[in-house]
Length: 260
Image (cartoon, rainbow, N blue to C red; front, side, top):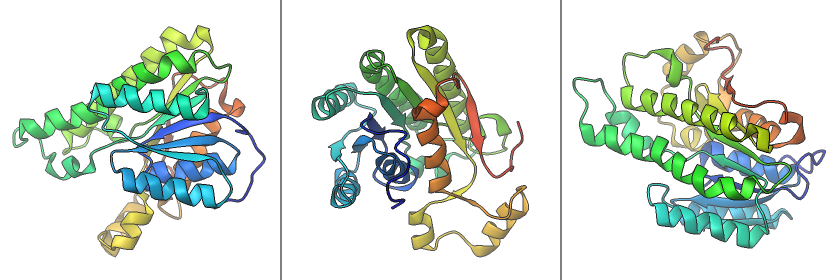
């Protein structure tokens, strides 16, 4: 826990979707540390409950909600519950992904179309559903901000993971549309695009070979790999008044691995 920071987000009402583990969980911790009141939403409700319980025990306001972002009724119910719990909505971080599909996302010839469909369903259609559920509430807030988790894969042109790259490119386009359509109404919309981040779950699992980590560090203009906290710090800034004049941007947080 970061301790109480300078309160940029004091009393702000924020939902983080995909918050049970990894970047989403770290973002919840950072937002709470900066004073936000947070709904922790995840398809894995016990994971969301564990994060919310940790925050509550540390003296913050946090509520756990279950949501499958491929289910429109479930998304609408989740956001309605969040507004009922928090009283309003000032910010949203949409971070959900089905990471199991990445390992099946080979190339355009070998790819099973079910993997493509599932990737688009979660990473793009699901993010649209969350956007539609969030916007009416965010537009009522003087601080309305939405942040999506994109990826450097959206522009890197990799020889693998075409479904993932296409979904994230589409997400960047969705974000730009939202910023363009509702920027004059006071809303900001941005993407944070993480580089290779070692989440607590990856570190604990020990599944990433040390030589792969060394290769990744060698490929960056940095002394280390990223952490979930690095991404959470950018999300917190974009949801705060410090980010009010940042709109329609894909912000790469990657230690200089990919220069744009």
